[in-house]
View (spheres, rainbow, N blue to C red):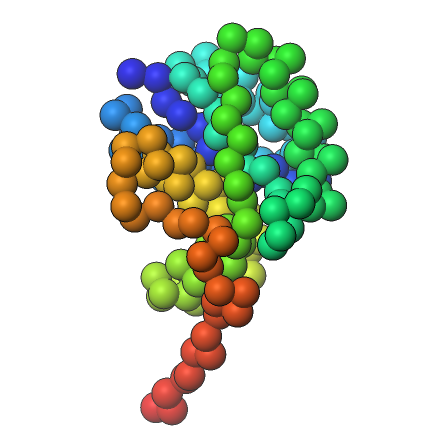
Length: 161
């Protein structure tokens, strides 16, 4: 089966995630320089067929377009031109960066590893893709961005040894 690619597009870096063949799970794939993203995706597609793209769509808390929307829209147009026969789904990306950082902390990732911005981009892409996959399967585990509190982060205490 064709894979579904999740994309967290940024001006400098783009995080990518890929679905399993059945379209149930999203896995963080790679962080690629945004200047090379189309070339990377073409190479990936030559090895593994891509059924559709799920592109993170930047929005503000009130649902209005975020400042980054202009860059994401320009990328969407490039992607559509490079892959004219592949569907592009726009997925709300509110809170994905916060959720990615929370996942890294909860997963026990050390602070030095969390400083790698590429890791957060890959995990954000996986969150974007998993949200889409969950919604398409009717799963109740999907995250509604409007339901996530503005201050999601919690203080992490360090124990003295």
